[in-house]
Image (cartoon, rainbow, N blue to C red; front, side, top):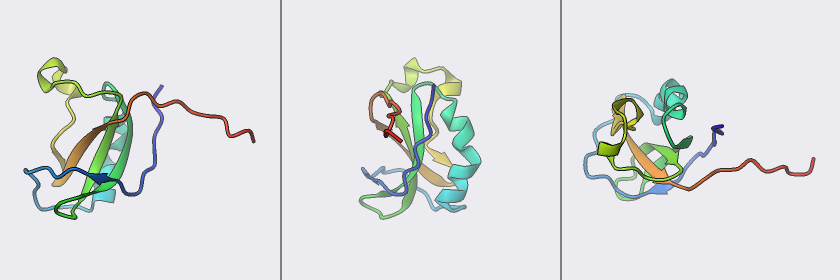
Length: 101
């Protein structure tokens, strides 16, 4: 089971292949989140800020990084979505916790 994680901003490492955004990162996330959540190992999708350029990016949280050549083509996270850079961040397994309410 995948759990959507709503992250507003996360500092992420600089990616040297950034390009100018054609749409807002929030719009791109909204347009693509459903498809991204169906990819192998994806546990969440958020918006972050590149720590070098300051540009907004889409952050795809995964359980663990897998070399691109070991993924099926349909499970590869794209480098950009609608001109917005995409970063992959390995965070391990995500478990829902009961807050006691």
